[in-house]
Image (tube, rainbow over all chains, first blue to last red; front, side):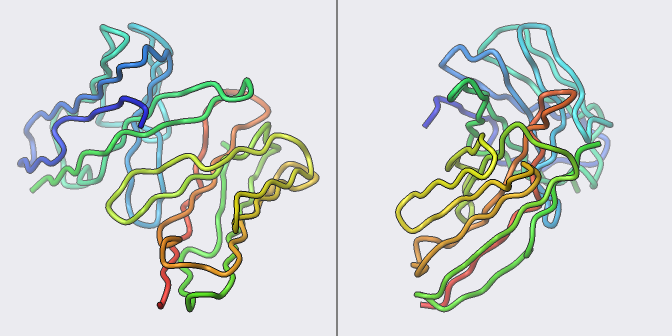
Length: 114
Length: 112
């Protein structure tokens, strides 16, 4: 695959606790993305990054923050987890193909907030 | 904002039958991409279409991009059990922020 790992792969937490998910890439790509996947909603963009310390909001950013202090790592933080944030979280990197960007996804993190 | 609608949401077929999923965007797209996600897996890039009216084939899969660059389709001929999964289209708008917007996906199940 594209050298993308996510950790943890599974997590159970309680409402109100902070949670940080990590995405790590080995290919030095500039663009990185965090999505959540829920039944009936497909993939929805949470935040994305276009370089170290350069991030922007996506479609469903409320309740989430991100940081990118190194090219290879993109962190997603739920400051105070809620049950509505139970989901599968995918990280993706952007690669140029025919001068258009396509995305390559990590294996995902399943998060359950009780 | 840009919306990408995909139908049907679910499709169950007998092995050997054909399958088609359709994707419609509220705005003109610079490209359309298709991804496949196997059960329990992650989305995997299949193909991208860039030109108006473009048609591309990958073995039994045929991808089309509409003339107005607002719709697309994926057709699978003679489905096999390996085709099981969810198929997503994703559109890159030709205007404004360059972010992919994914359709809701079509989940394909197959009776062997």
